[in-house]
Structure formats: structure tokens, C-alpha cells
Image 1: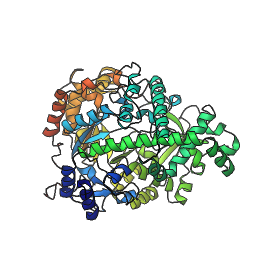
Image 2 (image 1 turned 135 degrees about the vertical axis):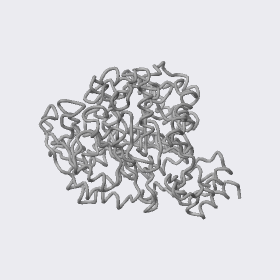
Image 3 (image 1 turned 180 degrees about the vertical axis):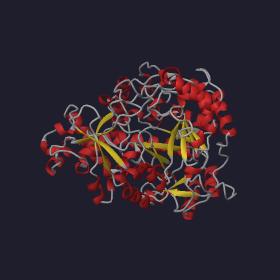
Image 4 (image 1 turned 60 degrees about the vertical axis):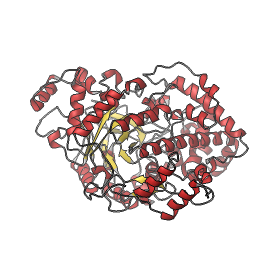
Length: 598
């Protein structure tokens, strides 16, 4: 029996290994990437045909390694009653994957991503927050919150370098690349290049005599969303990009004869789309495994709503407020607020919560299960919409003439909690937050967000974003992806009253050259258990590096970090602050137990 077979057998027999056995396995097999649930590693271990070995998941609030199996109910990823990982004092960086360094016009899951993970680890950071990674559209300004699927991955994030390493491309294919601005995403030209390379990868895949790389297993495991998504994508291509409401009625309405007919007619394209999703999630799984090995958790982002022109709405019309032809009747948004005097009219169809409740919110359970396979912590965007949501008639031009409608928050989150007892959720509670929203957060112990850019307006004594009003169970940010950078805010947005309040509160007033690190230090010293800082603020960048301006449709989501900016000097500075303010995690034991990790 080979060494890898012996270790695999040992871990399998143990069932729930502790840290010692995990460390033993990784010491004996330093090149073995957990999880060992892919067909490739099972073949290497001589265990083909056996059930998948569940992947170890570091439970950062206790002294054990729990087992996580993405094929199983995600509620089993943690033992009931274990300490909430969100209470551990940590810090991290907010940087979307499109903003990573890359030679292909857009950040991706290749070398630049692994270098950033190394930067995080060297900086003593244990959190990496990303935005949604689902497929975007130029028609929506490439927003990661406007996607064709709530389950699929964005193929623009697939790394050509990784494809070459895996044998799907030749090194010569990578030499035929365009010249890109390393500081901005060029979506159109990047899509042209990557689509060409992905096409070559698919052709090489088709030419293989046997497909023993896990593709068929991936397709079977993800059939519940992948089949509809692949067909949806091919139909959109066939009908020249028309939204699904513009397709012939028989396929628009998903009659069984039409589904069978079009599935047969578009069979090759459907397989191609499934293959691209296989590539994305294999690369993502490898990157996430690398993060967890380096003791870094990934915070993923789940938008509350999905796009009308998506496989989700086309496949599940009964869950959304649509008319008889599938068009949106009531659209989502928010009333006038800090970001916009006319509110924000997003256009997404709102949910028929009554209908969802009839099958115990199965669509949401599937969505959460899927995300728990790919993230360690999830952030629910626009959390207040789970309690009461702003709905606007689809005929309106702005969000002003909307109305509040109640959502079954207690029933919904109770159902999720029963299914996922130890789920780690961050509630995006910005905007108009009423007592009923706060009550739900308190009831389910969901931490909220505290952006410091909101802290210096109004009454200093009562402002909930100032440090003296923070609680342990919250996440502090200097700002979010929807805000200006700290330096940009100071130079462009902050009024004299806000600067005077800063001076009154801290007894000093920074200038544009020091304000970013002043805010970072304030965030790090907060009692909040989690501190997350946008990468732009660590780099002391101004408004030119802003990620998104709400209510502005185009020109967003384009900023990228240049690799040479991730220096050892910057890493050391971040590491020092992390240590000073008690956010350096030496190990992942239960801090109250005193038990060693290994």
C-alpha cells in the first residue's frame, strides 16, 4: 500500500480527525491539497469508487476540525452549540476577484490570487472578503450584483495560466495576449481574449479519449442548477441576447416538449457551458483550499435579489412577482437615503414570500447550501429586505413612489437556522434600519456592519458608527465597496461639519496624506470582533480607486490593484497593527478553553 493510500485510509477510518491527524496528514503529504473529495485524489489514493472524503473545515472558534461535505446537507458543516466563529477577534481585507493582479485584463483565479493570499497571511490577516462571483453583463455595467445566475461562476475569472498547467491550453496559447492597463479592468477586451482561450480549452477537452478529471461527477452533483443555467445561456446566445421574456412562448414558458427539443438542438453548447462551470469551480475550490490551509477564511457576498433576466427567474417564475408573460410587476429598490435623493430602483423582481414558504424556502436552502460549499462566512446584502422590503411598480422611473411590504423574517431565518445550526452570517444593515430589523438581528445574533465613513455626521454621542457605540458582535469597516475610499471621502465628500466632528472626537484632524491610516487604526482598535479594510485604503488611494458609485450605471467595478503595490513593507505595517490591537490569531483554539491546537 502506498503512502498516500495509507494516509487516506487512516483519515477515512477516523471519520472526524482532530488537528493532530490533520497536521500529520499534511506533513506526510505536503503537496496534497485538501479537500480529498475530487476524483483525481481518490484515484491517486487508490480509493476510486469510495464515498468522497469530507473536507476538513477549520472551525476557528473551537479546538477541533469539523468535517464538511458539499455533497451533503450543509447544516452538518459545524456541530450544534459550538462557539460562533464570528466572535473571534480577527481582521482582513476587502478585495474583489476582478481587482486582483493578472495579465489578462481582469483579476482571476490564477497566480495573482495566490500571491494575494500569501500577502494576507504575511500580514497576519485571516479574512478575505469578496463580492459575488456570479456571471455579469455589460448591459448592467458589469455589476456583480446583476447576474445571469445566483449559482454559476463568472467565466471571466477562470485563469488561463491554470488551464495551461492542467493541460487544457498550451503555453504558446498564453503568449497571444493583448496589452492591458494593469490598474483597470477592461471587460470587453478581456472577454474577447478569454472566450477565445476557453474555446480552445473546450476543444482540447472534447478530444480527450476519456473524461476522468471529475467533469461528470461535477455535472451530476450540480445538476439541480447547472442544467437550467447551461440551457438558459445557450438560448440567450441563440436568440441574440434577448431576455427570456422575448423568446418564443413555448420555451419562455418552459413547456416540456420545448425543453426537450431545445436541449437536444443545443447539446454541444450546453456541454460547453457546463465545462466552463466545471473549470471555474475547480479553480475556485483549489484557491479556497489554499486560503484555508493558510488559516484564511473567505467572506462571500449573497445579494438578496436576483436579476429578472436570469436562469433563476426563468426556472422558478412562481417565486417572483411577475405578470402572465413573465415580466416584472413589482421591482426591488430602496427609498431615498444617504446615497440617492430619489432612492435606488434596482429593477429586480421581488419575491413571492408566501409561495416560497409553502415548500419551506427550498430555493433559498439550495442557494445557501451552494454558498456554504464555497465560502466560510456569508454576508447577506440588503439585510433589511428580509424583514421588510421596498417594492415599486415596474412602470415607475425612480424608487420614490414605492411602499414597504413585510417579509416573514422570523419564519424564514428559523427555517435556515434549523437547517444550518451554526451558519456564520454577517448582516448588511446599512441604510434605513428600523427596530424590527434590529430585533431580528439580535434574535439570531447576526453581526451588523459599522463603516467609519458614516461616523462623523449628526450627534456624536448617539452615532452608532463611532467606536464608543460598537459592540463585540459587529464588523467594522473603514468603508465598503459602495463608498468612496477614505482619502477620496476626505478630499471630496466630507463637509466641514464632519471634519469638525472628527477633531472634536479624537482631538486631532488628519490631512489627506494620513487620513487613511488614521481610519485603519481606529478600525483595528475597535471592540468589534471583526475589522475588514478595503485594499484601496491600505494603499492610501483617492477617489480614482473607488469601486462603485450607487445609482451610477456605468464606469464602476473597474479598479485593480497592481501586483508591485503588495510590498513586504506594507505587509509588515499591517501585521504590526494587527498584533498591537489583538487581531493576530496565533492558533485557532477555543480561546476560553486553553486547549492547544495541535
